[in-house]
Length: 304
Length: 321
Image 1 (tube, rainbow over the protein chains, first blue to last red):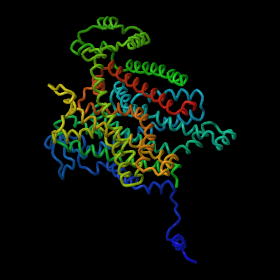
Image 2: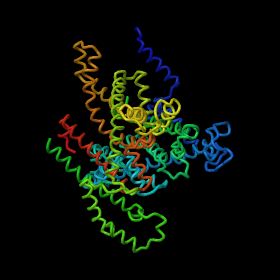
Image 3: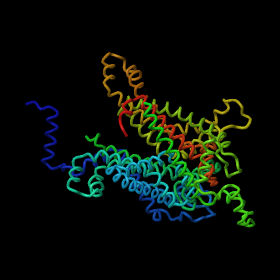
Image 4: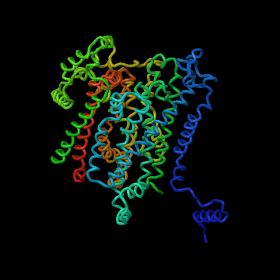
């Protein structure tokens, strides 16, 4: 019998299986699909590096991010000061590391908390329907008829500036999108047979929608959390750049960039704003790569 | 069709009313009232409580919240927007000065981003899976990841400060008269804004084009022996771009958000930089009016889009909400 190339391939695989040289994959399909996406893996690696670097900032840098040192003002990057120093002699690299803590905390924290609120409301309202659903839908529509940055600025002018206020505002402006996503998933899930079966067992509404239905809606929600993390980090940076975000005494990525509003600094001291802008861009890009990778690996319509 | 439009309108006006009420209540929650903002700090120590009350009464601030809201709303509808706290300028006057500048910037940016986004998206779809497609996708993601103000700053440094090709900011130079003199000022802000918005348009155009290319009438056109470029341009392109053009309207909030910060970076005297200035100065009447105007624009745009989509695609109307 003539062996085709396909047969030969099968033989090879069989041989390798017998030799146990490749074990049967225990990784789930989602993980392996994610790992096959080169951009997502690169994104995840750089994302982890930046997070670890800002978490262990005190170990990586001998300087204090807040300490003013008037003898070393506006120094260009050197071996001592990797990103140079700013107008009051503070080490920019250290400030970027410590700023990352706050910026990432705000971005990730607001994304997760607004997801929690959006999901809590969306699951229940989407499953129950009726007047709760109508009211929640209308409220989310009110929030969504503002352009996001305008609503944030309006709320900042009402509440005043603080770290806590900013996160509260982000949650208030961000839950609507998550709510709509969760609600839409619930609406399609609630007609499934297993849900009807659970209902006929007499399980309580809470158990059905949060314990049995929610896990089936989780993957698009995960994708959305990553994407809104990226968005919140960008919004925080923009607001702080304008001087309307986190109070200026707390180092965040946006607050470090704030100095670039001065045209003299923009022109003469590129290290005070260039590197931090790059770090924000790279970090957000990585988060977007991760989100994209997650979407590709969890979307059932692309399951191969 | 008429019932559909009527339904939309029935939602539109109460929505606007509720939002205006909420925004007005927000103003009420903010610290201080109009009188306390009018008095300079030097006078604050010498003025008596009676004088303050008299002033409040003169401005009608002693009336109930609902009454004041009603007075404000009715005068707003009649076109009287009230006065800014900074300098007491009529808000309608500020609007007349700033809105054209913003419209100018946004329209130019919208124009460039649509053309650029659609053509790149179509190219990307035609060469699906190729190196061009992949690099365009990555470039698109970079476009949504770089903070727009940072991109704007780098552009200023490069083209305005180092190369000195274009002005650093502003809308009109002194002594300049003709339309052509305005062009150097608008190039940088509009291109930066356009590039930031291209990514979204590109993504829509790509998926819409891929969608169309998989349809049967494309296969038919090919089987007739039509040259490939004719199939792509005449059949694919035309059909694919209809939804994309409608989607431009959906990107309006994005355009407004982006233009706000870009206007500030380039000192563009538009509504966005005015809004930021009023937030900084806690000029609540101005903040309130401008944000309501934004809401009005977004709601109107989405109403128009809904109606347009329904006109193009009758299935939208049949599907109940």
